[in-house]
Length: 265
Image 1 (cartoon, rainbow, N blue to C red):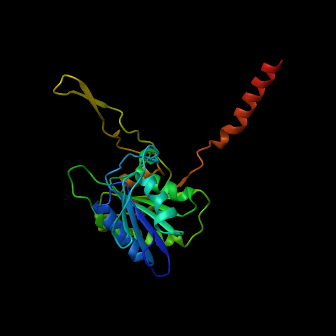
Image 2: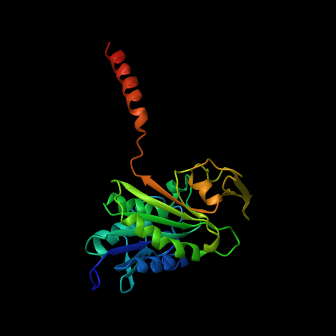
Image 3: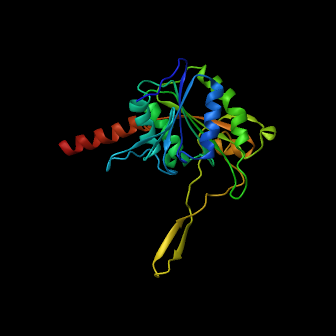
């Protein structure tokens, strides 16, 4: 299914905001600055919050838009799976997901379709990076900040070895490029989405709900992605797919071993 292409590095560009999202065009520009062969495979419609979901209840369709540009009527995970196993007819060297309209910080990584696309690539053995541009509601998105800094950061990351099962989550602050303080390598912070539910009544008298805003705090824990963005830095967070809490393994083994002895006595 692949279009005729040249050699060099193969980069897959995807997102969760949809094939027509401005951030996708920004990311394609970033990818082209890295050199090589750039492919774009993204959802037909906005899939924000889709997380790492696969479409299992219906068939998926691929629409060819132009050379190396495709839309999939599914989730970001569907897009990466189809791109790597069908559309490209071969391996990619790097998967870039984004640039998301809005940050993906703290617990956002468990909800984010942007991060999920990078997760799927990592599961399939391809290096992957999720990129997000922080912004405030009602204000212009500063896409130029991601476009200015992403190529150099990506080149440095790609030149270094990565541990197996690791993706990189990059967030750019809501600042023009000249006002960015620098780059920080961070850990995932804590910021729960939807602490407040907004209840309303529809015209038929039935209640409905909007998931509320993010938890707002003036200060975030030092060293976190949240603190870096609040201070005007670019946040670079390595994310591991192994969700096992290894420190608990031995204590759980002891607890369950004791229960097993008691059950057998």
